[in-house]
Image 1: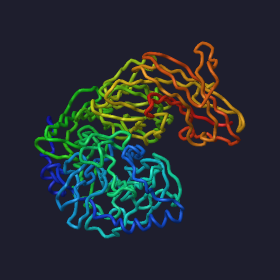
Image 2: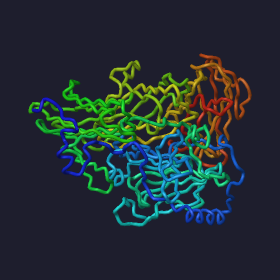
Image 3: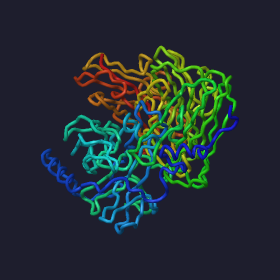
Image 4: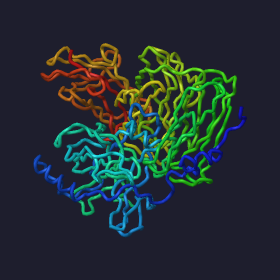
Amino acid sequence: MRPVVCSILCLFAAAIAEGQDPAIRDRPNGPQPLHPPIPYDLIEARIVANMARLGLDRATAEPERSDFEQIRFPLTEARNAPTFRGHVVTNYVDHDAYGPGLLRDYQCGQRTYDFASGYDHAGTDYVASTFQELSTEEGWMEVVAAAGGVIIDRHDGEPDRNAPGRSGSLASNYVIIRHDDGMEVFYYHLALNSVLQREIGDRVEAGEYLGRAASSGTSSEPHLHFQMHHPALFQRIVDPYGGPCSNGPDTIWQHQHSYADPAITGIFSHDAAPVRPNQYGSPESPNFEQAFEPGAEVFASIFVRDLDPDGVVSTVILDPAGNSVATDTLNGSTYPVIASARSVFSYTLPGNAPGGTWRIRTTFAGDIRERAFYVAREPEPGARAAAAVLPGSRSVQAGNPATVFATVVNSSNVAAEGCWIGPGAPFDGQFRYRQTDPATNVPIAEENVIFDIPAGGVRSFVLSLTPAASAVAESYDLPLRYKCDNGDAANMISGVNSILLSFGPTPVPDIIAIAITPSGDGILRVADENSASAFATAVSNVGAAGTLTVRPVARGEAASMRLRICETDPGTGACLAQASETISRAFASLETASFAVFARAQGEAVGFSPANTRIRLIAEDAGGTVRGSTSVAVRTD
């Protein structure tokens, strides 16, 4: 047995032999060009022709930045992705029109690039954060629409691994969407045959799948190039990030992550030192393995992003009893990187190593993540996870925790093992989960510990999200990932297992809302396409006092229904006034109230699609920020 672990420096010889940089400097600080200039003139001609054919006018009125619709994050991890955070930002928009080599991103830094030809980087590059060849092959990074709009151009059929030195076309696979506010948005470098099968002129909604991030169009790493234009603006390029050197200080994101966004992006176990070359396109050998026999050497790799000179990445290997058997530390002051770093170390299991689930636990910049490996056993594949969150929204002052309860179900006939929960999009703050006793809601485990779910079983958790003191979000629907080693992640369903978050610098109302359908199962059943039904909602304001407007909204096929709301007597359930489309009222701190929502079908059947066809009750302030929300599925029987 080797009594101590070996840091990545111990792998120096092996790394050199296999072409891997032993200094773990994936993305050094400074400009890092990823792709040649995009042929905008050719694409512009296509856009103009397509919009003319569709009868769409390009925006001509010059907007204020505050006029733009706030957008959601354009990436999500695929259900099969084992990564915690699938991307790292390597380049922002270059706001310095001079050059070459004169750079200014939205924070007045130099995290961008330009070319001697006069091209200034005009978008944001979101790069695959861990094993890049595998990310492309398996489609780990899925691209989604940042807002609703109309497809005004799309292209597919180009090779998607066009790293420098590989043959292939300079043309890229892409989708361009005209948002409802007139913005024209590029989603570039998509994978071959991954582009959504929709026609130019078709509508897509926010969060809808567009393709997978790859390297079509020749780029040095697989990534999404996300770029926003507004045809009525002189410069045309719109940077969604608000800052002192951007188009303006106001962000266009529902939630703008921090400029440096440190996080653990992946933890993996291997049966040999993994080869993840710095040059994309060179051979990559992850050597993944999660099942080991006593006496075997276990390699662990830890990937992080935005490791600054003062950052420290601490990792410990824990045996099934929770005893620490090995540690590793990656110090940012030794290896200064700005965007991406990795550490590899190994531990040799003793010959009498106990069988069971072992854990690799890493802490970095307030982020805590675990992954499992297994000794003398292996999980059986086929676990199926589903999840729900209650309440579905929280609204807090930044710096204070927002807590919700989550239930995770394993509907398969095999145990779900090595499971974890994490944000599915950027969150500027700390995320924690703890398993709870379902009878008492009292935590019974440490923070962010992996867990198992027996076949057909259920686990309950309390989730805590504490936004950074400077963080801001307005009606931010944060998706959550519920992933186990032996199965795909649970489907991410807005209003079911996501959290609608709002936070900022001042105390605000925080409405906790619970909906109850007549059947008690969260499904509102309407007898037929000409009938009506209703559900009840109880609310409590656990935040500051404020005046809010309460209204029901529908999505999917439920949008055809006529919705009304009334406040009710909490004792009898009777309406206190005639039902209307909205109710505006003042809520005192700690005040409770109850409402009834009536849904009438308008001659159209509403099919059962609980992920997409829902009625949501929202409470929003005068600025339109949601301060409380709950939802039910709806169908006509």
